Length: 214
Image 1 (spheres, rainbow, N blue to C red):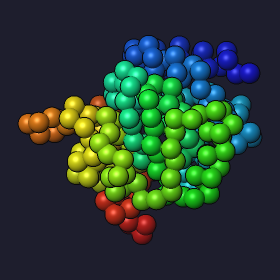
Image 2: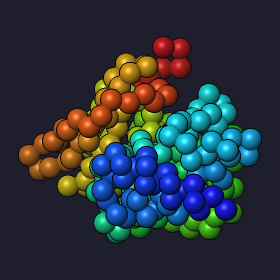
Image 3: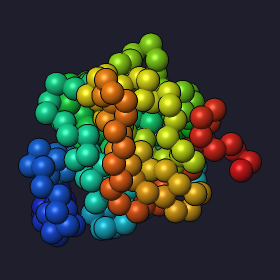
């Protein structure tokens, strides 16, 4: 079900917009995006748009999932931290591409629903917990990659500290309603920071992000 829609999504939304990592393209052709949202939205599941998932959150558009995943440069044996589980779609794509995924969601109802989807799809390499994602997951650090699916006002130093040497952080940074996607690589000489593309994400709420009332 929806195999043709996924194939068209990959061809026209990803390949035609210069997503070239074959492993990323293969993973996104495999993962059933429609199962990470309400059935009432299935007719738009493979459209080039973000969609609501409840609790004021969204599932990112496929292109944004692809470009953020590609920026991590995953080869297959990495340990990756995701901040902002949301629907779980991004974590599932990551689970196809690396050894272990650790993912943090601050909204318990979303986390419970998403955990059921992971179990139904048989993902055994995803560990999910509820908490403040802005502090990372220090007891499981270091990570080869960290991906943040919510917008921060600045790059939290705590994430760079939890990267392994050569590890990469992908994060949207900027104002509440307009951001730039950044890739940060940890090196012995200090972090290397690259800009990617303009984007719009929900705010990263927590100790090292935006406050609830901002």
